[in-house]
Length: 104
Image (tube, helix red, strand yellow):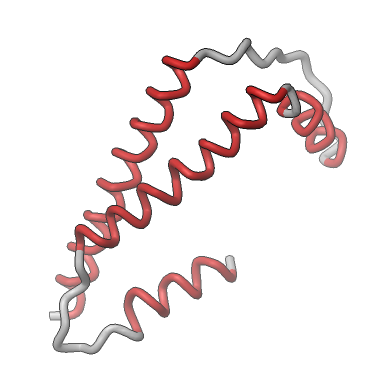
């Protein structure tokens, strides 16, 4: 929650009222952030740490169910990174457009 407040302040409140938010820059930032999180996940899957980490997270929440993490696949990993970047970019671009409209 705190991170969202900081981003909101930087993007919206600290931008001068006569200046538009750069939708492209915001899209690149959000796309990079989203694909960066997924890149970390891919590294965890590749190294074999993902299952141990996920088991630990589930036990902390007192949950237990059967699941499996598939073997690492380079093509699927690349598709995951590209898709998350595209979705993040589109979301950031749309957010920039909405905030620019709200400022007017």
